[in-house]
Amino acid sequence: MGQSNLNDFFKPGQILPSHVVMIKKALEILEHSPHGQQLVNFVEKKGITIKIMPTPQPEAYLPEKNLVYVGFNKNNPVSPSRFVLMLAGVLREAQQEAAGIKHPKLHAPLAEHVEVSMAKHEDKVWYICAVATELNDQVTFTEYKFLDEIRKMGHNEAIDLYIEQERKK
Amino acid sequence: MLKKIEGFSQTAEAKRVMAAIEKRANGALLFPNPVQAKPALQNPTL
View 1 (tube, each protein chain N blue to C red):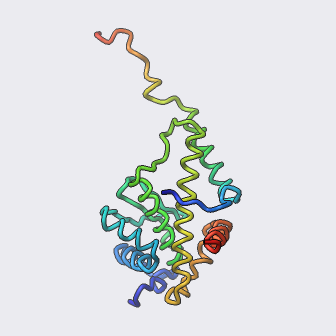
View 2 (view 1 turned 30 degrees about the vertical axis):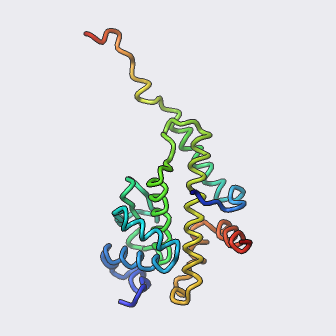
View 3 (view 1 turned 90 degrees about the horizontal axis):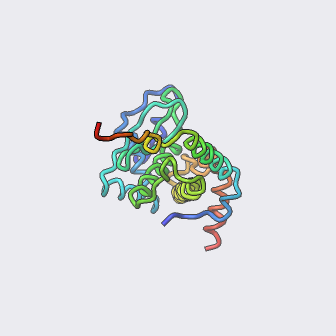
């Protein structure tokens, strides 16, 4: 198994590695990015459990504050880079929860839902953009094409705005 | 603590997310809060 290389495992039609291996390799890749490293530290410090489950479409969610799920269709698995970015996003959501930034209660006023949930989403997207650009800048991960993948995930405008914002700093 | 992306609120993604949030929130409001909807007992001692 090559260092930090999930690509050999995620080809359609191939047998997927064990969940443990996939998660371990994804966390290893995240460690190469400063913001990803923060997430890995958070996982270790808080004892976050990461699970993989079969879902029709790629999705990641946080059923409990210390439990995250990454789901995809095993007959057509997500690319390694998407798996890493999905994991980064849902771990950031777990960080938000740990910091007490929670989704409003179901019957909270609409304005509260909009304000809080949008802010949480924007923060998560910011974090995925940060991880994607940091990993994309590294020669080791050229073949992962993190920036192409983040665009395919629907964050096309966000990544452009993020890069522009960081350029101004 | 939450990070911001300048101009994000104007993106198509933000509009999609906003629509989903509103749909979810409005859907929840269609149903009475089960705690509030519970009828008060006329005579709690019975």
